[in-house]
Length: 307
Picture 1 (tube, rainbow, N blue to C red):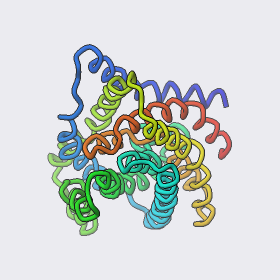
Picture 2 (picture 1 turned 90 degrees about the horizontal axis):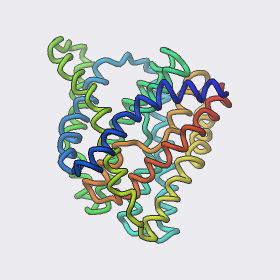
Picture 3 (picture 1 turned 180 degrees about the vertical axis):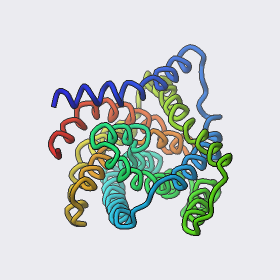
Picture 4 (picture 1 turned 60 degrees about the vertical axis):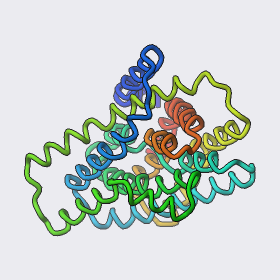
């Protein structure tokens, strides 16, 4: 168990912490403003990452069906829990939207994939890639809807989903893959460069967000949403993921991979969506910070149990 903790720390956590620290330093001493990065993130990095991942991943249809079923069921249960908590605690719409983002979306790309590769090897990484692709589509469609609901009506939130290029990148890549249309090497290389830029930029934004919100005292509704989100992500989500996996009768390495990915800390791109649509970005940023720190202890324990 101790070896797993050390391996996770040095092979996954330390590399991810470098751009976070840089973002925090830039925000503290150079007053880095993260809002202009929203356009770069939503209209350039995310579509490029989705297209690159769809084109390159090797798909096993049995895994796709099981992973898709798990993703949808897990999402619905977590969404229902977040909305129920929001109503029970009488949270404003902004905090409820932020709580939904925190509860439903995990850091499966920047943190999850390195951790899966470290723990389960190349086979685990292949299984995880299907989940990550599905999650990227969900986060950048359903996630935008969740965030936009704090500021718009149902129609307006749905319009926001289709106003961003991520969904069209997924459709285009799927069609190319389905009809076996080759993508020229030069274009593939260009999109791979965009995908490689995703993680450091998003993690730098996260570091800057930590500094910008860390010293400010939160309102009561923000604090309630924060602790509720941390509870759901760290404690309720593993139980819900386990229930989903058992109901769907998923077994073997796919069980282990999906369980760990579903228990990851809050997705770093949640703060970008929260900031763009005013879905309590301060609460979302703090949730990312605390769930990520707590995951250094919780995830190795969960990995030790399932292995």
